[in-house]
Length: 410
Image (cartoon, rainbow, N blue to C red; front, side, top):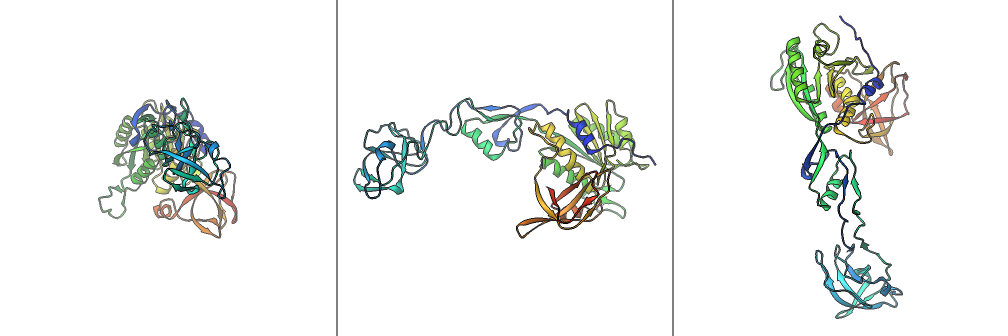
């Protein structure tokens, strides 16, 4: 049996991926731009909203005409018109005059404030009394309060959220340039793996990894390409990998990455022109039997066949890789969601490797408690039960009950 010949630390792996370049840009409509990443800055060509508008239902007026108004001594004003939403006022205000206005309505010329309807009282037809003074620009949005002309509204590398699409729509921008979605070719290997439509015989199991990896890809903004199951034959494996390289930016191959007599992933990678092995073995657990190779800007991953190990490798490294390919700005080694929790029992660990422990979260007495989930890396049910994972560093022999830990949420 062979041994791992190029074991790397997690930091070694990140260092080897830091020069991965983002993909080319493409133009898409904002209706399909959610969760895509901007390839260029978006600069406004106009002010938003573009006119002075009221934030309240009430009366538009010159603020100085309300000075001194009180409940005991209200100020009477002549109502000279009404402004409805979407209308341009065809009149202006003079001293002692006001106009009814709806929320969102455009202020008429001569008005610089709005008094809320709650502080007004009709005393006779065409006359209203104001019982509270207002300051200039009170209850008013200025033409460039939301966005100024020539302002950088959204920066290159921004992951587009619903509110970002809203501001683009408000500025009349219907098409944006985003980085192309990375594509990941997914291959499962092994004589024992069968399609999910089949009933496994004794010694066989259905293909789990294609679907967990595919789901992780979709969640990461990556398009999965399911290439299917390949048997433990070198030539077949090589053909599948070549197909993956030709169609995708990343090849994810699960199974066959260890050092057994039928583990052909390393040999298949080495047989491909222009492919360089970055790692054969990674000093993390679960996930040590991982092979990482590179051909130009494309990477090939021989992942462990155990579902937990494959998912941990994805969470630790592939999130970061896909962030680089997608052009995400301010990228760090971990870009997922995490919370602080208190560990509710001791966990032992071995030095010289990073350990990733599955945990279940419980909220008690105003704080989160993290309970380790024990189980082998071949048990997908432990990932279903878990809410996230915690990391134990290479030089740490474990964690103690009561310690605060960072839980990387699934």
